[in-house]
Length: 365
Image (cartoon, rainbow, N blue to C red; front, side):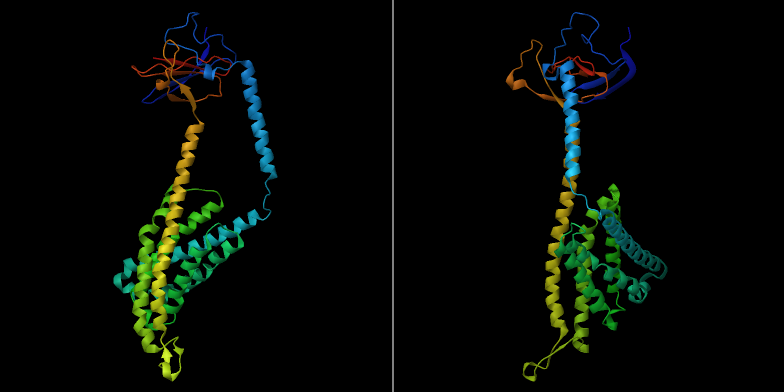
């Protein structure tokens, strides 16, 4: 008599061989083997024994759990504007991604065609688009205040304010700085970081996670962010004698105090805060990266644990010495199947057969 179907699944590990055989019919078995006499290498696993009443209770418990979950979800207040918020954030990140992508691609093409000559006219070719993107970036400071995103306010404020000082004050206000090669390196590093950051947030708005993009988002900033701050510092240092010479943005003082205070002193103080902001943002980004990958590892671990049920080893005579109790993973198969686990030679055989309508387990030494 054929009691199992032809579909057999097996899984081999260092500790056991797990074989699952699907039952041909959905019914309760009186025993696991055809012969009435139980083999010496089999023993009942009473911790996993399931009869008809237990099966009904288990199904009832699952139904109650589903009902409780639905009731909890129904009590959670849904945001009626959630779709509108996600649409706004998606469009914002899309526009920023397209803007910085245009800058990155244009600068890369010009670099291959013109070589080092492209360093000296970067500002005149890319300034308009960079102005637009950096003015749009001011929304990244407003969004946390409005509760649209969970990002921290201070790191966003430091980054946006720092970049705008470099773009509008150092580069935009001084024509002498617009032809310097440092402009190329500042713009190129900014755009390289953003062409991976904005699409990551954009896909997050629609619940999509691309592993490669996630890794680039949380790893590429490690070398690029300090290099970007270093390039900004070089630009500030190069602008100091220009501000001293042109007296631009100087503050008038009484003749007794010297007549005027050069804006270069403000920039020198800004350099100190720039590296302080580097430390704050670097620490913030590092925490984000660690939290991201720690949560993913925790989810993978919980998924593995939830998909396995513990099975306890047993000696042949049924006695289980306390010092020899161990746990083995055994998948609970809710389809109607027989599960066979083969233990390695030399190991104490685990507790064995579980006979019920749904699944059965047998361990062979």
